[in-house]
Length: 437
Image (cartoon, rainbow, N blue to C red; front, side, top):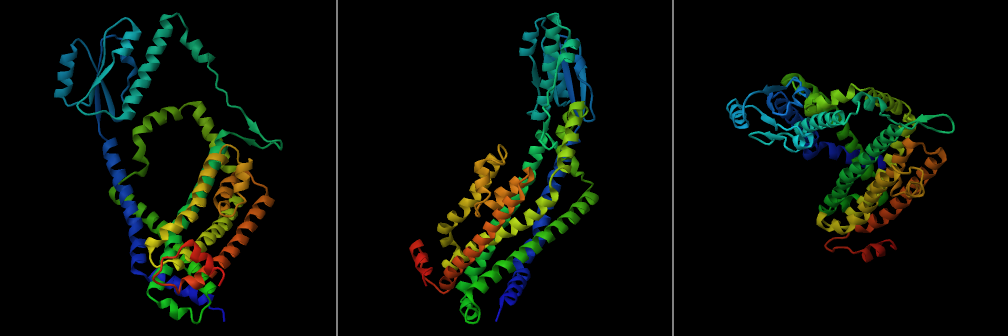
């Protein structure tokens, strides 16, 4: 009799009714949203801080480049010494004093610029000031040399080489970045899902083994059915938890934003002034158009279907190995010697995907690792946005499914003997013997 559906149901219900599972399902998004809200709130407080910067420009060259913004005001000082200016700024408790020494030599002026403040100024603020001063002093040096600045600006040429396939499909450098980002996110999700819920399967097997419940269950259920039931049941529980996290997290995000008036978009506002200035240029607007076009040209249907298939195949493959490890040991401490051989292909897949797919997604290394079942779920998902022939995807998926079936048979033989072995820490030699039973 096939008891697999009953085992899946039992495993799923046991997991979702577990107190720790329920607590973490509810508590995890609350903690995450609370952390995000705290960071956003503190960032918002910091960004709303009014800053007043006094400027003592004894050279008279650069005082015209500073304009007030929403949160930063510039106060020009005249007819006073540096010590008087420092005392004035300190008494008024201003953010700082920018001093440009008086000199007719622009090189000497550039070397003598100092910023005085009570506390260490922010890196973003100082970088912004430096960029403005560098541009102004560079322009002044060019003018002193008799160079027409307007002609210099007019002569600047930006080259963006157009990319197009032989079939006429237009692409750009941004396309590669977008494709790598989508592939990287897919591979990372699979990697984290395997680590989190693979360990859950392993712990479940160890718990039942140490409690001796397994001796009763195994009398009426085949080991392979029990192992598959645990894998599928735990996977469904993990998917349920993941969906609840997304829904609950979204609801909490809206509630927190409404109640506390936190604007999540302001979390990066120290850089907003620079970003807004950059966005105003025609070059950046063109790049944004390329970005939207790159997203539109992605093979979304292929990516979604491939993600589902490779995600399921990769997860089931590694889950069976985690279940075999759980059956072979008596406690989690003993699992460490067996974890490295499992994690190494995953880590290798991530590194291969990041360092080879971005350079040559259709190269020899990328292609080979996208066919190896232990690495293909990650590498192939990172290659697909760049356009992988369907036959390659089908071969890779077929190899993955075939390897999973072999791994299930392999793991079931270990599982069959291991779940009834107690009190001895198994070695690789012992596991090899179990395969012959």
